[in-house]
Image 1 (tube, rainbow, N blue to C red):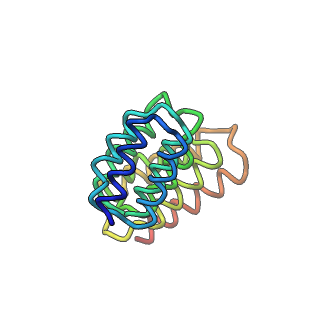
Image 2: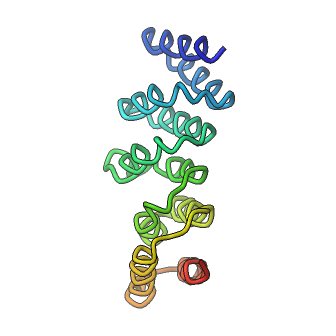
Image 3: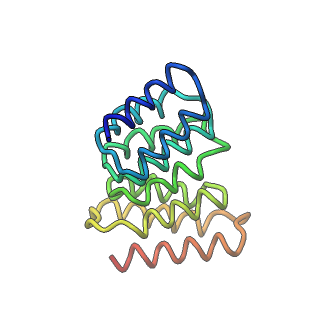
Length: 170
């Protein structure tokens, strides 16, 4: 069954049928086809279609394979996803993001509402122990943002204070 799903996705890609590609990617994600992860990552890196990128990111999130972390973070940092990275950040929640804690804090501070909330949730979902150096750096960034950004809305300041409390308690 898993090989069949992968083969159907490959056929859809060859035919350049966006609808079929999206459908197969969703099926692979729901079935948690771990063997498809390298192919999904390659497709994720290659596509410029924001909707398809989001569907692939969600499928990778459903599968929960740690190999997706680096390519997702690379896309999140890329200029080409500047206006459509909320779903990419959301997809990180099923992965162990301890190694990208500082990057996530930057997204909480500098991202729009959706990105900021998704990054906060990704930090909140980290189960592995943080490296104390990363927590210290993250807390410093939060403090600097709170103290130096007069244009933050009250809800942004509150989110940053909650994040600092969360990091201090771990």
